[in-house]
Image (tube, rainbow, N blue to C red; front, side, top):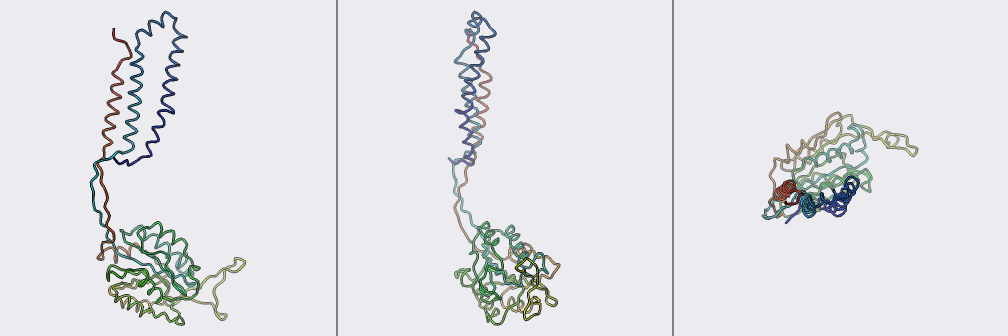
Length: 340
């Protein structure tokens, strides 16, 4: 037998703790009231006409009714039947830029916070796919391995900030290689997607060679969907908070730094992968990863990610409901009077 709601068993403690003391108290109160209202001679006649055994039996029937209802509330099930459940989906790795340029507020509340909100919304849309998160700036870090535990993904996502990586800069190529080599398995060449969320400002001094990394990923069957944040022409300043809490903007050699979308680089990255897409998100527009998932990933071919055996049981709570009603009807039909 399997119980769908075993917490209902706690109600059974009401039998010895509440119901039995209440019955004893009621019998005692009834006898006390009769002694006050009736004389000794009349009490003898009343007691002779009432069967104590029947009264006790009726009380037992009511207790049996209560126990039967509690048993029904536990949702009893038996007759298990094995069923094999197959879960199908794709492997998705989120590459999230956490460089200081992602603090720009041209996309509200900031590029980074808007990206985190969009990823959290995406988790509500996923249809059993596995998801991983890699953050990158001057270096890259696997914040969450491939998993179907979306609650764990939310926990990892909440801790991401511009402090998530220990070195400044933007090394997109290293992040792509990290996902290709450490996140995805090497068993299958298909069913893998990288969603790259960045402003595309690659700093050449690090020599991460992002296009070459994307070519290698594409050769292994990985598709890259690049989400470019910001404006390619005007750009936006990068806010920083001073030691006294005052808001200023990042400067380099006395000049304010303006972060612009590196659209050309992102286009070159996605075009070397089969089915790759570049989707710019300009200021004033919405970043909706759920819609992107539905249009580009949900309809794509999937593989079997997991196969589990589950048991289906027949619901039998109706038996105990019927038993409780039967006991209640019997209690109502039985008279307390003795047979004359």
